[in-house]
Image 1: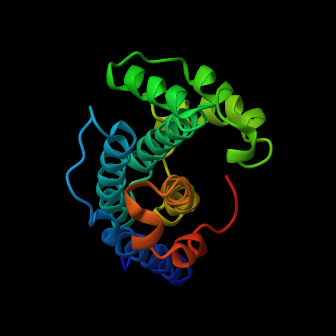
Image 2: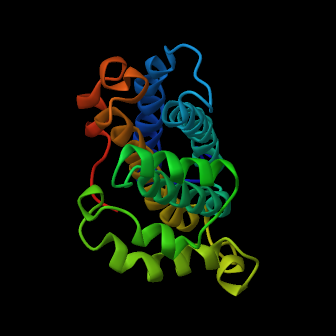
Length: 210
């Protein structure tokens, strides 16, 4: 890869890798919690499951970055975007009872349409115009994640640098949504993440907006 990317993109790649590695180091102390069960602690059980998934996805993100795999980055972006939407929907419940009800439905695979999840998120939980931009954004990421002409053209006749030009902003978006999920958990003081995770370092990784 060193010989395939130009020097500018190598520098960008290295900077992105530093952010990915730093994110993993920041959230690792968050795993210092005891046993939690779905029945007794549904909020914290869900949080633990999501935190584990994010840690795993972060490792995959680093692998995708070094493989310059723009296709897999789109799959991963759509996954983290949907996870972000569902997490923020669940904790937008108007009461503790409503949150637990939404969790129980999630545990039972009682799924909603992505637009229904979006509609149920508190407006002050998400960036301005996040809901308004959803339809166009989700349509585009879904097209890239399916075998069609758009996804085929991501590679056809593209140099490694051109592919990296699509990959880099996608990696940034994956990180942004991952950080936002963990930040929500720290704000809600779940699993003592507010004490075990350095929130200033966490927020510093979330440059730009979704």
